[in-house]
Length: 337
Image 1 (cartoon, rainbow, N blue to C red):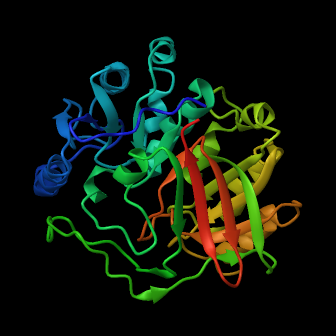
Image 2: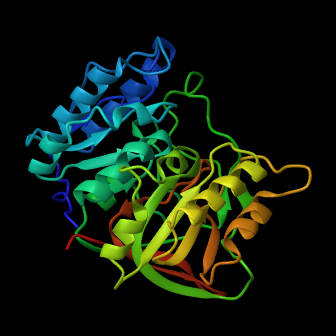
């Protein structure tokens, strides 16, 4: 794996929207988020592909060119989008993969639809990428036990995070409260081990948002089985989270990934907490059990990397150990070689 250099105050962070852009009503929140990065000591440059007039921020060729330019610019240490969206998949055959392969790795930070780009960058280039809150969510204070993505990207060595055991339903309206920085975590939600018992498992992290990654299975951009074979000595920790799909659809997608070999070299599977709906005859947990319960693998559910606050940053390509038992619910990632 090739890890980008640790972020340091004074480094430049590029902002571009490879998927959805930001409308005028949300410009105040964008300004707050950019100001937060600058207050932390970073230089920030905002790109041209930021419009919210369409489903994407710009035509795909323009978005791909701007993202490639930022990722290959030696003056830019990290690239973070305002948020995800719907159609980042249209970038994959537009990106200049030769230019990216020849460049030194740069942190690409994001989640949701950005998983569509981040995972291929890890699989194809061997670059670590950071699955974490996007720019619009960056001003939030991390929950107890969890780290801010800026601190994860600034670290070399082990980073241990522990579950706060709390979450909230819904998100703050950034139009009404553009300066919000705290999460009102008011519900209890511990990790769950499928089948019960305790888990202590290690492997290399790969994953992201289930709805946008499942279409990549069987394509040159989602060859998790080949990546797993390359790292078979350590095994993979495959992590996935559902954004909004009903339980049976989640089950179908997980079955599809299983049939495509995504778990063949896995040492364990991590499932993020979701607010996606159950169905009349199947819950989200039952969908996971139906698709993955047949595997002889530990499955830990309701980790804090889903579309539910709070958020646990994970580094694609990092070696990690997950412990879930009566005493501990924690994950330790090793950043860097």
